[in-house]
Length: 458
Ligand code: BES
Ligand code: MN
Ligand code: ZN
Image (cartoon, rainbow, N blue to C red; front, side, top):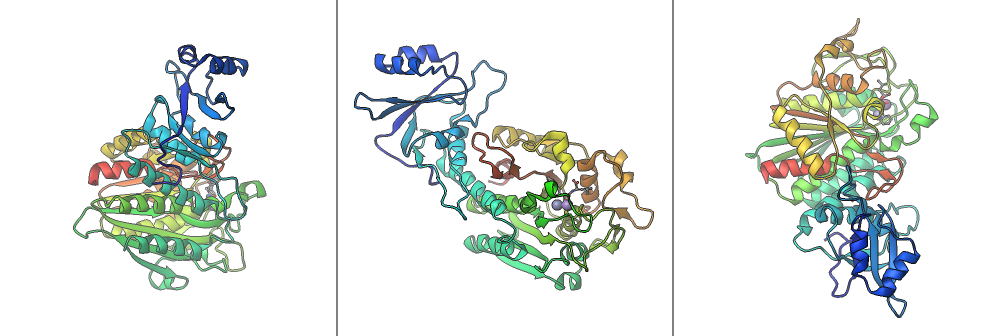
């Protein structure tokens, strides 16, 4: 089980209240507790927390406000605030929150703190597993979120292409998967020109990570994750404000590793392949330049409109490789555009696919897991925006419009034989803490996709 969960004979009860259920709940409390709650102005408003003392002053009972049943919107992760509020100890749900399964998951997700460089005040509150909930599944998801968050939160000086490859290898080893890696100039010899071009200016060699797992006769599911360990923007350098959190630019890689961990742990009936182009987009005399042209793995000549549109370049070569074995399902995740944030904000990543049943399944599972994703179109009328006067296509169309869509259309040029393709333009970061989502690196899309895959291949 995840460390946030603990069985205990005596656990402090947590009662969930809303503005409309509070009166009834209060009436059932012992009189001193009712008076104490009233004196402390507890009304059951969302996020409100009150510890009720026993006669001897010890902690007897916890009250916690959640959104009203009648409200138009309820944060099903609201109980994820509890680990940050409760003193160390073991607790249990005394009544049902809006969604007990998601509440338990939120409790575990909200217990996360990044403690690599500072002794942190990791929450000491534990939850007794609620009845009737598959705690193995909840723990699997929460552990995967920890993996993704730890990888993203680790700063670039300790999470370069090599360290990212080591993390991938550790995961592969844990599940007996095959691991291989093409490093540095070998990328040129084995025809990955774009991955090499983006990564060559760093003193830390670019590489392509390749993990394979599972029965070769099972359906082929291939995951590709953008592993830009730091994105300076290259020669078209980012301003300091834009560069600040670019250690998170390997968020796609972190999330495909989190997804792979869940798939392998649950032994889904797939032949899994994970591809991660791991590079640092750095500045040096040998950096790739605006208007350079590179012949990609697929053979398309790509003109560089902007060296800051590097994610789609490294993904293009990785997608081309993935596509060569005609996978049944090809999924890529990456922190690709600021434009996706302009459209939908940090918490709602757009996804793209031409596979209608897949789109419906993604939307359904994203909703059910509270791992929100929103479909945007592969809008072919904009495809010509990728045209280049010099080469087959340009990586950064001029004009400021529809940047997440044109990025998706760029990637689409490199996928031809996969039976089905899904692209998710994630943010991988929570800018300010929300229930179950501490500030910093975030697991996005992995839980929804895991549930989709386990429904199809479980
Ligand atoms: N890693 C960035 C995208 C990004 C920026 C994600 C900020 C989240 C927050 C990506 O490599 C990038 O720089 N994209 C450019 C593309 C443009 C030059 C066409 C962008 O979005 O500005
Ligand atoms: Mn960039
Ligand atoms: Zn980037």
